Amino acid sequence: MSFPSFTKVYHHSSYPAIDTLRSELSVKDKTVIVSGAGGGGIGATVAMSFARAGARKIALMGRTEQSLQRTKDNIVKAFPDAQILITTTDISKAESVGTAAHNIRANLGAWDVFAHCAAVAPDPVSITGADEDDWWHTFEINARFSSHFAKHFLPKCRPNATYIGTNAAACHIAASRMPKSSAYSASKIAAAKLDEYIAHENPQLRVFTLHPGVVKTKMSTRFLGDGPPGFVFDDPELPANFMVWLVSAEAEFLRGRYLWCNWDVEELIARKAEIEANPLLFTLTLGGWPFQ
Image (cartoon, rainbow, N blue to C red; front, top):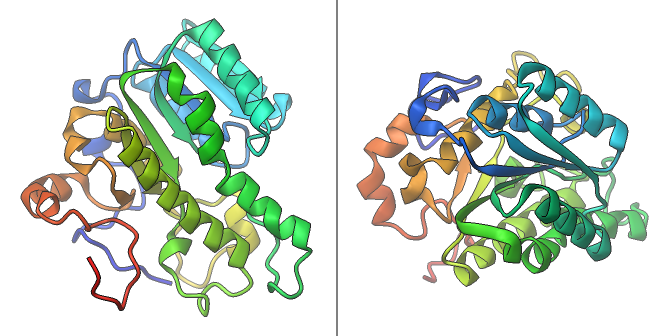
């Protein structure tokens, strides 16, 4: 199981250019929100990376208070001066998202960074064999949140805030290679397109869509188990630190693009002119049809 890469170097773990201790990547004085911040996913690592980069106001969104508390305890243990707010949230429900947005604004102030790491993947099943409500619930979690975010969180951000939508390589993979994954793959494609609309409709907002690599989580294990022979999982600090880099001025030229955390950022910077010259590069389009 191998993937093509835009850069010659394809990373599986963090590296110096995205080291959160680099002064250029400092997020000191920024308020950060991380959804999906409980255990079992990459959100907890994302929150820790932003804390390591200097964030001292961090809101953790997730389904269960217990898992969010573990994330909070780990951050406070490493950074005792950090102000960590827990807000249990059902991101498929407008009322729940609205309450979370209000609580975060009231307790931490306007936000600067929103790292959206929450998602769901149902058990592999064909469209015909799927329970219709379970199948559609995947879209309510993975895609519908874009509407809730726009209505409830966008009015509460500071100027030049950053929104990072965590997506999936499933967008790029044919159904024959990911069988029985229709709800997950299609909902992730929808989410990526909605990120594009959020960026277009809110030019003051810095928007990025990110494939976070293949990290060994509860979700990826459901599809891959321990992976095929020779497969290398990605370290969770790779996407987490890549997100911190996206907030920096170095990533400004990639606004509105769909990126893979495995790509080497120094190579991306070296190819800045090439990327800027092609507005369709790293965007979702219908392959096989030359309409532009």
